[in-house]
Amino acid sequence: MDIADIDKNDLQVDTVLMNPPFKFHKDIEFLNKSLKLADVVYSMHNGVTEEFINNYAVDICSSFEMRKIRFPIKRTFEFHRKDVKEIDVNICRFQR
Image (cartoon, rainbow, N blue to C red; front, side):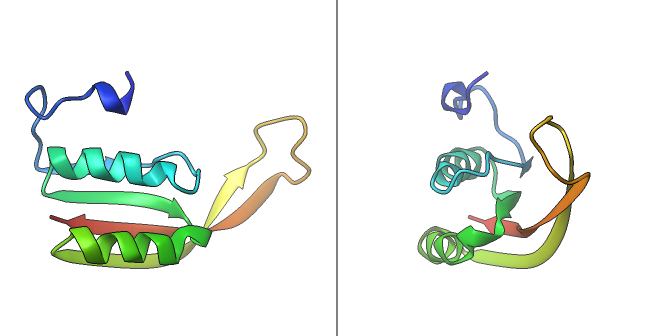
């Protein structure tokens, strides 16, 4: 199912926990939909989007928290060079 196909009338929840695709502006499509479905959203975002996510949250959320972590990603494809690569990730809590 595509996130665009989920309708507020079909689904209303208290909290959304998500890991959107790590594409720079694709995060917002997922956040917008999630905040229509729930009052609280927890999500992971690529570390390089920190400023972008902060600006988004200031405009749309009543409360916002962000924690930076190093997230290990195991080799999943033949072209990966390392067994494990750590990337910067922001764990966020958004509240409408």
